Amino acid sequence: MRILLIGLPGAGKGTQAGRLAAHLSIPHISTGDLFREHIDQGTELGQNAHTHIQAGLLVPDEVTIGVFEERLVRPDTERGFLLDGFPRSLAQAHALDGILAGSGTRLDAVLDLEIPEGQVVRRIAGRRLCRQGREHIFHIDFSPPEVAGVCDLCGGELYQREDDREATVRKRLEVYRSETAPVVDHYQAQGLVTTISAHGRVQEVLSRALDAIGQGQTDATGMSS
Image 1 (cartoon, rainbow, N blue to C red):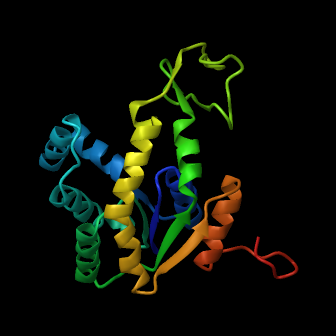
Image 2: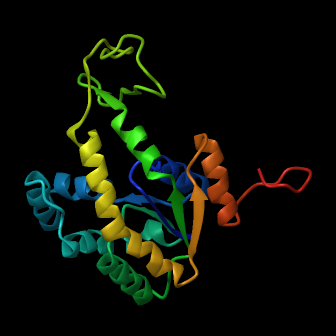
């Protein structure tokens, strides 16, 4: 299957994308991972992306599209893929349509993770990271440390990323409304979009996604789980 996962920042796309792709045995293709891969390899696309990222600028559409066009022709995508973070604009959506049409394929489904904007702000602005262990992540409401500002795992200082500050999060939401929301409308017109509530536990949201694409498991009563 060829699936696009889309939704507001903080809706849990990264978490769900990884689990959904693993369940379907298809590659999870994310913008961030692709940029890091090209930057680490020193490719021309990677150097171009790195220049913009370091300057705090958005990577131009032509660079982003080039990175994905190269990725989507690799052999592991023959059985399908799950896109996370692309397309983020109508220009990118039209480019993706063209790339897929050139190989005689198209998207099978677009899953739109829905969550109220107020919940997005709470989720992201409450996040705290450890300076000593990047993988040590806490939340002041949902998973607070035993001692405020101190990592339970290594004793490192917990801090709030600049990108996670409330003002920055609200700006990201504005960008989503103006740049990415039209992508949902674009695929809605093609009959590809299913809106899924991002509320609840990770497994609950995953089950909704699987049901939406006809991959939900059924129990003895015939009800999807």
